[in-house]
Length: 161
Image 1 (tube, helix red, strand yellow):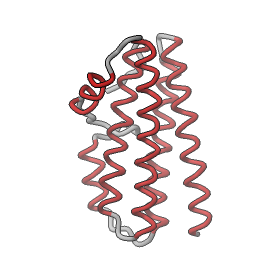
Image 2 (tube, rainbow, N blue to C red; image 1 turned 180 degrees about the vertical axis):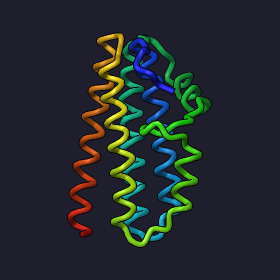
Image 3 (cartoon, rainbow, N blue to C red; image 1 turned 90 degrees about the horizontal axis):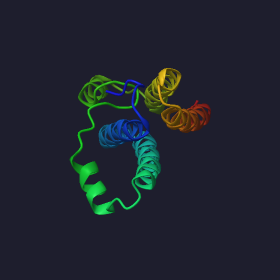
Image 4 (cartoon, rainbow, N blue to C red; image 1 turned 60 degrees about the vertical axis):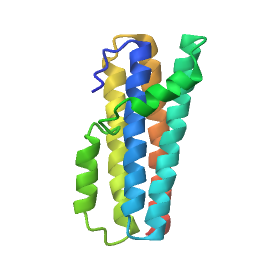
């Protein structure tokens, strides 16, 4: 689990693995959601996390110079993503999701807001405790991305009432 003591490369890899865990969780949630709008919401969130992964992948590859993309893709495929961004283990998040009996899409949005809010706070904590300034930049950027998700979810919540 990411601690904030990582150097730049470690911070990127750890953030990427959390993004992967969150992407996988949202994919799971999409497949288990009760309604089409909730499935679409979780599918869109999964796509957002995938975009974060691509951003982090770009940063990592830039630092490595001539890193072979296929070896990186292989790493990403095999690397375990044990946690979602909020610091919860993926298996625990999936178990909690299955136990939750969603009455409507508003509850699914609230769950997503909780996850994204915890992710925002986690990245903020990591930024504040980062030993390496370059790692802090990564955590700050991820905070901005999480804030965008929170803003979009809040808009959606207002629409769905």
